[in-house]
Every structure is written in structure tokens, then in C-alpha cells.
Image (cartoon, rainbow, N blue to C red; front, side, top):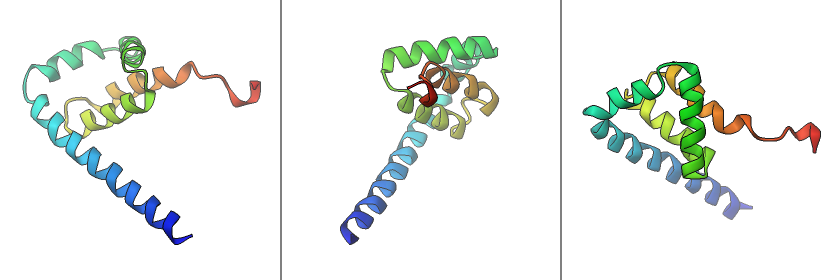
Length: 100
């Protein structure tokens, strides 16, 4: 029982540490042309959904795309309004649990 609790706590700490490292890396990238490029890609909700779908197809992981979007928002490279459609696109094609 205690080993599961300790493993869970250590996993959460490792995940949050990884997010912090990713945030600092994205902050460095966000100071250049990346911010302008990303703002153009997600300028409208439809562009954001298309960008999110393409990025998910390339990464093959909606969780990774959502984590990257959170990191970009934390690094001030994206506004939260612009990041929402790009992280909603990967989850919109999942089948509903009711249909299974």
C-alpha cells in the first residue's frame, strides 16, 4: 500500500518537474519568431483546430500536444484563448463511451 502511494507521489513530482523544464525551454524559444509564427497558425478557432489536428497527427499523442499547449501558455507564447481550439481538436475525434 505504501509503495503505491510513494510511487504515485514521485510520479506526480516527476511530471511537474518535467513541465517546469519544458516551460523554461519554451520560454527561451518564445522570445524569437516562434511567438509570431504560432500566433498566425492559431489566429482563428478554425485555424487552431486544424493546427491541433495536424500537430496531433504528427506527434501521435493528444496528451503531448495538450502539455505543449499548457507550456506555451505558461511561457506567454500563446494566449489561453488561442491554445484552447488547438488542444480540443485532438480529443474531438475520440468515440464516445456511450457508443461502445
